[in-house]
Image 1: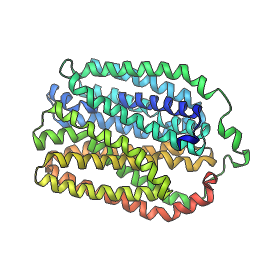
Image 2: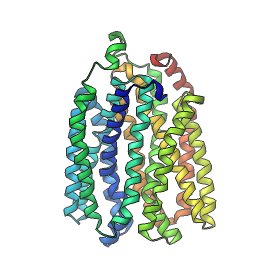
Image 3: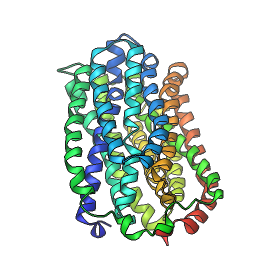
Image 4: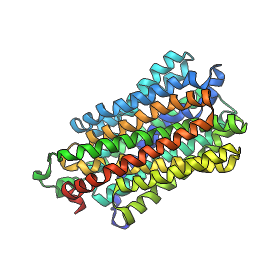
Length: 413
C-alpha cells in the first residue's frame, strides 16, 4: 500500500499523527499516574474515578459538537483551538488538590481534546485518496499508541524523582512544541496544492444524502463502538490497579508493565488493517471477527485469574486491548469515510467517536466500583459479556452495511 502513497500524503499522515500524539499525551497522562494521584491525595480509586469519568463524558459529548464544527469551520482552526485549551488545562491541574476543581479542569480538558479527531478525519478525507486515507488512518492511530508507550515507559521512572503534578507540566510542554510545529507546517502541506477531492470528486457527488436504511446498521455499529470503548479504556485505565491488587506488584512497576498494552495495540493496527484489506474488505465484518477473538481472550483471562497466574493474565489483557484498538480502527476511522458523498464526514466521525467515550465513561467508573464491591473475577466476567454484545451488534448490522457500501460508497467500486 505504501508504494501508492505519495510523499506529500505521507507527510500529512505523520503531521496528523503528531497532533494526535500530543492530544493523547495531554489526555491520558492523569490516568497513567492515577494510582499515585489517589495515593498522594489519601483517596480511593473510585473517589478519583470521577475526574477521569468527567473528562471522558466531556470528550464524548464534545465529539458531536466538534463534528459539526469540523464541517462548518476550517478544521485546522478547530484543531488549533483544541491545542490551546488542552495545554492550559494541563498547566492548571498542577495547581490544585481539590477533587471538585480537578474534575472541572479535566472536564474542560475533555472538551478541548474533542476538537482533534473529527477535524483530523475531515482533513484526511478531503486531502487523501482512498489508499492514502487507509495509510494515514493507521499512522494517526499509531500516535495514540506511541503516546501511551511513552507515558507508561517514562512515568514510573519520573515518579522516582518528581511528583505526578510535574509530569502534567512536562506533558503541557510537549503539547506546546507540537502545536508550534502544527501551525508552521500546516500551510506548507495542506495549502501547497489542490486537494485530491477537488480534483477527482464531481460537484454532483457532493451533499448526496445516504439511504435511510443505513441508519439501522449505523445504530447497531454505534452500540458495538460503546462496547469497544468500555473495554479499551476501562481495561487500560485499571490494569495497574488490577496488578497491584491481584498480584501485589508495586504501583510504579504496575504502570510500567501496562506499556505491554500499548505495544500490542500499535502492532495490531497494522495487522488488522492488513487482514481487512486482504481478506474481509469490510470494516464491520472485520470487527465481528475481532470481537470474537476478544471473547476468547476474556474467557481465558478469567481462567488465568482464577489460578493467580500473572504473566498469562497480562498477555491476555494486552490481546484484549489490542483487539479493541483494532475495532476502533475499523469502526471509528473507516466507517465515517463511507459518508464522504454526504459532505459531512466530520459530523459522522463525531457521532461514532462519541460512542467510544460513552462506553469509556461507563467503564471508567463502573469497572472501578464493580472491582471494589465484587472483585476482579466478576469484573472479568462482565468483560466477556461486553465482548459478546459487540460481536452480536456487528453480526446483525453486517448485511445492511454490505448493501450500503455497494450502493453508496462510489470509491469502493
